[in-house]
Image (cartoon, rainbow, N blue to C red; front, side, top):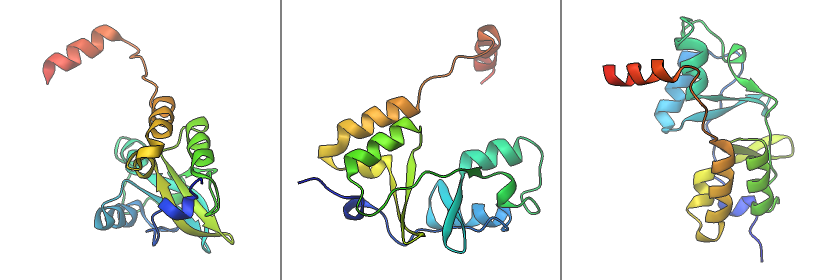
Length: 155
């Protein structure tokens, strides 16, 4: 018998709205010790915000997290699953779309979230989690290998 997302998802998900500031979102992420949060408008997912989004799209660009709204730096076009979705199907969806976290939506509202970690801790899904992670985490090649080596020597 296959498991459904409702069997492994985390419920009571912390979320943010598109109009909140990035600083507020970061505080929520810190409070709940999570690296990403679904962005919801009227309970419906409209995007995802990750700690990496904050680093690359706010801090690295010199933007002010206290005035920058989530909607200007979030990833939109969020993929979702349903509570009745098969875990194997979800792992495949995550792998194909290179995502680490999948919001679970019921009746148009965020009902939970599933991460690669949720799959990995279930022994029967370790293969799917590993395959999804390997597809998501394809190594990038540095543009300038000499510059990278020099940079590594500095640290």
